[in-house]
Amino acid sequence: MDPAERLHAYARLTVGVGLNFQAGQELQITCLVEHAPLARAVAAAAWDAGASYVEVAYSDQHVKRELIEHGSEDALTRTPGWLLKRLEDLAVKDGALLEITGNPEPELFSGLDEGRVGRTRMLEYAEAQGRIVGAGRINWTIVSFPTAGWASAVFGEPDVERLWQAVADAVRLEAEDPVEAWRRHIATLVRRADQLNARRFDALHYRGPATDLTVGLNTGSVWGAAEFTTSFGLRHVPNLPTEEVFTTPDWRRANGVVRSTKPLNLPGSSVVVRDLEIRFQGGRAVSVEAASGADAVRAQMATDEGAARLGEVALVDGASAVGRAGITFVDTLFDENATSHIAFGRGIPFGVEGARGLSAEEQLELGVNDSRIHTDFMVGGPGIDIDG
Image (cartoon, rainbow, N blue to C red; front, side, top):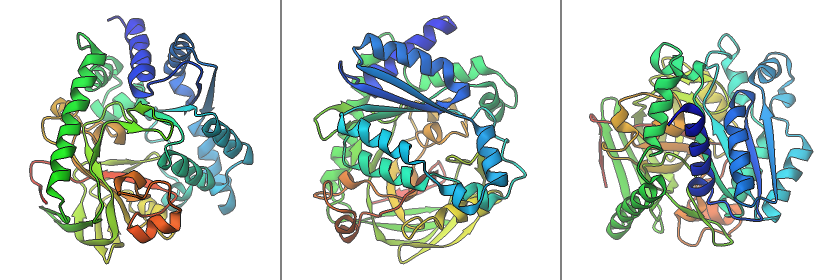
């Protein structure tokens, strides 16, 4: 495919497989200004699919840098009220939400205070979106758009075409029939989740260099994969790509130490965290060390009571389409699908039997962690054993 054809094919895959967008739905797209070509292509594909309305909300990392550098502490976490109203309006209408990632300037925030960078997040918006997604009130997905800056972070040079090829391979875009390829892949992941559910594991034990961590599961932990289902019965694929099977651990039962196996581009911060090492005791992170970015992680973990506890565990095998590329993408959407990962922060309600639809307090009592953040980091690889 030539670049224009590939872009529109990617947009159609995003709308048709990722969102499973339906005629009559509204679509909100959130992205950086540098992602505009893909946002426009997705908007066209959504209108072709019968959208009732499509809206794109662009943000600008340079504006965010000014906020981090000059804003008050309150400004760092402020959410404009109209953003919350817009999100709730989408949920009331059973709408769809697309987020586009792919950092065009990974070093833009370098030199700024890491603690302030880590604290800069619209907390009320993050909390509202987490509640809406957890309750299945919207269908949503995340995709990434290759840029020169992102390519430079991956390859050391702005080879956008090479990055495009890696992304296309990871999302099965150039398969003879991408939709059918995704159906087969989803079925494979669901079978793996079913096998894990049949075992009813009590805990996972992670062992490897600088890693000896035991994470207890809930008695009702349910392994899931690939597809989510909304409260109004619509299946969708939240991540393109996706290679994981995942569940919700008991936030009270994490003990030991774990070291990340890939760099983490801390969500929303442009801070690259390397050699992250976290020690847990009684379910809570009690120490955080890293070769770079430690202060930003500590700041995120101080966001609220649940931010320093675990909300997800996910397993990825060594044959994943992303892992076979042999690339560190420095983009969590891709790197978390190259190897196993865990997440600190908000738990996944439907990862525990009977938790969906309960209040946050009731979910917490069941062992589902509650937080305004959810940050995945990679802990798997050839040198790591994970035993159930």
